[in-house]
Length: 315
Image (cartoon, rainbow, N blue to C red; front, side):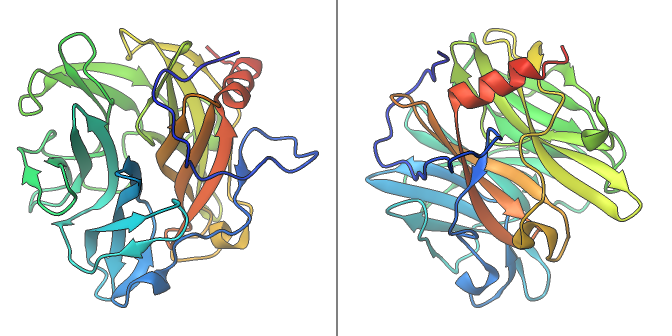
């Protein structure tokens, strides 16, 4: 059996797999868990990050406003399902990720300086006050995702370098830092391989440490005659050299199927951004954006996902 190397999370949101369901990831029947109606100034609330905090959960949420500005706000929940969002913007930008490292909650997100998107880096201990560091990438990158601990004596950040446009360059890279300020030592990780991800790929939630390696969920994009379709895939990276891909599923794990994934501001989108884990049971709860409009919740276990990756391995 595969194991998550981490802490127990007794109150992880959870719903058992439906009887007879053949796929490794299943949706929460109460989806979406957050909609545009949860904040009065929101046009949409979608790609967002969640971590355990105190006796419940905290998150940073992408809110595109009624002026269509990209903003981030915080929110809190006792059960990971019912959320109370704050109306104070903490940063401009979008698509946040969160992880806890040595007592600090580290936020990475797509920052928006005048000359193109970068990866912003900031930390907090209470989700009320934030310390912002230098941007980790410049001039243009997206999908900046931190590993939840130092590997060797360095922090690691997954990124997708790109240009000012929406699509060109679709590969995942990794970069390293001794101090969360100076970044370098770039390494290629992986590129699109199968049709469902042919246009581009990007790292999703904080990688999950397992006895098999780092479990990385990611999004892949297909360009069809009807536009983009975003789906979720998974790979396993080496624990000591995470730019090395050990296993990778050639088939997606979750793709647009339900109405809230098919219809919205951007149709046909499943975009994973956060994952909660319980090391005792192997349970994983995944938060994802649906159709660039709402937040959905899905479930799997480390065993189900690793088995699926191995059965569909293209490495």
